[in-house]
Length: 235
Length: 278
Picture (tube, rainbow over the protein chains, first blue to last red):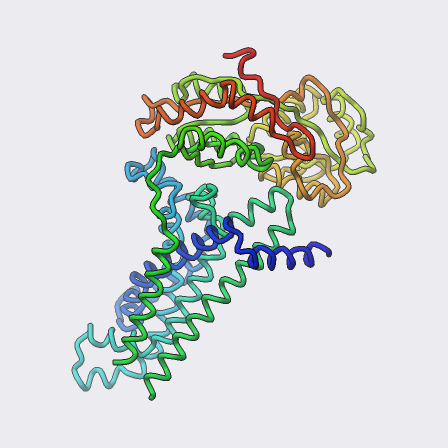
């Protein structure tokens, strides 16, 4: 298993020398997946909150559907987005295929159900605590939604990170709609796939380690922000 | 309130990060739908900077199998097609999707396998005969199974050998349904014979103890061609830049650059644009 040792020293070397190609790929990975996370949160949090608070016919079915969509295969999402954005497809005029925007769209579609389904559960649990209070104070719905989202913010942050994790780690969708073009749409996961196909397993593994470090760094930054915020809140 | 200040700082940092990593990209560029061997072997890394220095045109390569590259080009998702399956390329042009097909360069296919060589094919020059021996011995054979240029060639060789390997699919005939590199990884992993183009093999880093067993048959010739996607069919095609790339590739400078590309002292592609055009 000399590949592991080799991969370790390679990963360290790449980071230590701040390899220009690698930095570009890391930057694009972060840009695409963080944007996808932001877009998904903007859509999924209100949907999750609405679903968590309301009672209507067919709600059970909607929740089952949403939970099932958490298992959307990235390749299928990639294929659907490709067919939409292809020049031969309905949105071909936009010329978005093989751009970072296409990758953001695909990842957003992939993780919106995850963020919506998980935030629905979080909000529903919190709402069962607050419901009576809301009713007795006649709080309007949009205020209630705002209050719930705000009070659940730390749990929802974890939900958003789950979405980010899924987005930054997937390869099936971005390799189809991005095309793994060097210096344009190559991200960490597609670079790993490429090096694996070249048989350079040590380099592929080293990139994998770097990807893990990125996820670690993002989570650490979020945690630090959260701890600072808590400190100010109780100061 | 303090917490909103923290939030603002967070947003500013995120925004700054965004600006830092997103650069303006307004220069002229084309998309090449390509076979994988030209990318995996590092040929594009060698050629594209030379071309860009000369013309300022950035070439974006989408490297997929030949079958998928042709399919993508039919959907107008590319300006230039660079693949290696002459019949499919000629059909592409005949159907009106391509302007004209030009020979670009060649190398050859080889069959690699484990040193134990269970079917005793080492040194056989006649590829169909070697295939027949592999089938007789029921020795493992890993096929691309993905309708790529290499897979099409492999199917033709099986046809010439009189064996229908698909009847043994899942037994000794293993269709990976993936790219050349992935299939080589699989083949090396399970000790199966694999047919590959020589460029991918030379540049492949996970050879294990595998070696070249069959080579030198005229039938193993591997011709690459280049085609401009037809702007009449696909108005989005960047005709001027795409044609400039093709002209450079088949011209003196491009052909010389292709011939100059070596890996470990070995030439991977042999330019032949000026012989036999079609």
